[in-house]
Length: 114
Length: 111
Image (tube, rainbow over all chains, first blue to last red; front, top):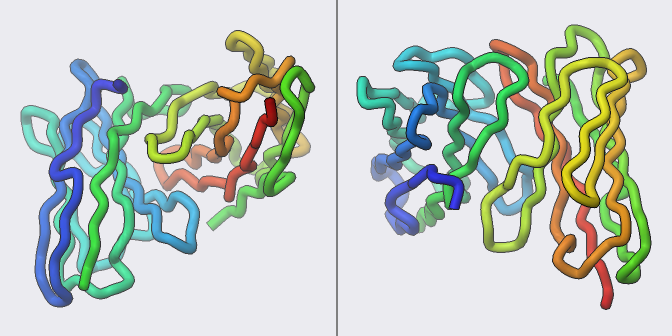
């Protein structure tokens, strides 16, 4: 158990809908990262937050957005869902935002868009 | 996006064998390289974070080396055990920009 929690564990929704995925980092970790793993692709970095501010951005679609709240939990919002958004979404946290810090992954949220 | 490559794609070894695999990455503007171990149906688990050229890190039977000038890292497993079966991922940390993961090396250790 990494200490990172993600809810829900599974989510099934229809195309065009909007969902929110939630992540609570390990106690004391200030940085949160979001990743997507689709069936035919490897792990793709989406976005990073550090202490409430966006720090780095990867291949995140405009339909997706995220934020980190004052209590350091983070939410990833996915809207106008398409079939291709079906994937496993991981959240990870680290102590700080610089290079050299290990990232601890949560169990993931499996999103199925039908 | 700066590509990260890993080889081999998959590997089968006998219990007790030692093995190694490679992560290749662009060497310019290097900040850090991460290694992860990812078992099926679980989430990635951090093994090492390496930042300096010539770094060598070790955790039990697993060790890693880093060459930032030529852009590669090796992961070694000594005396492989069935519980070492997993996908091993490396990721280049492009500080302030993104993290780029390699496709992974899938290791199967046969008893």
